[in-house]
Length: 210
Image 1 (cartoon, rainbow, N blue to C red):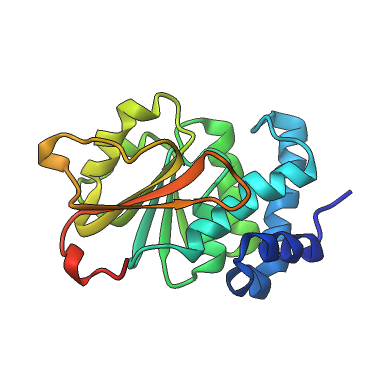
Image 2: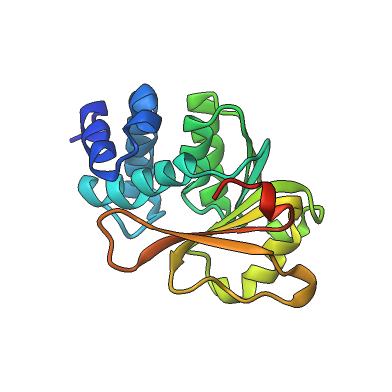
């Protein structure tokens, strides 16, 4: 079976993100179906059934897009299968998204999604840490191996007045003083007892609508 736009819209209603997802439900479904097809051959993710893929991949990505801080550019640090970067690119065409992924088969998948859906994205087929410092308005990190050790390199890529965005669990992270962000806000993901979105703002917190 294939993921349908109706399934995407139903999930978006449960998550309270219909205004973001409904106009692009067909493209979100197309992304989900591409992921399922590639995953059957290359084992890109352990999530294989449609229901969990919609919840953990599509909806987490749409939730990220719905709560995206002010930005013209964004980096998906260690993008993997493209969450949240691809849903952000689908839902927020005004943001130029870079997908950084060092594993060859996953980078190839990201390039295929970008080509197939005509997204405003660039695929960096290498380690995100090699990108220029302070070069993105928003940097996203989710489910990256040894993510605690990746926080400082990810924060170093955030531009002045930019944001570090973390999809995970627990309390807001502590960063070295030279990379510290001046304000954190935390949003609980709908339907989850432990998964949250942390957003840290580097500067000008007083002007950021929380």
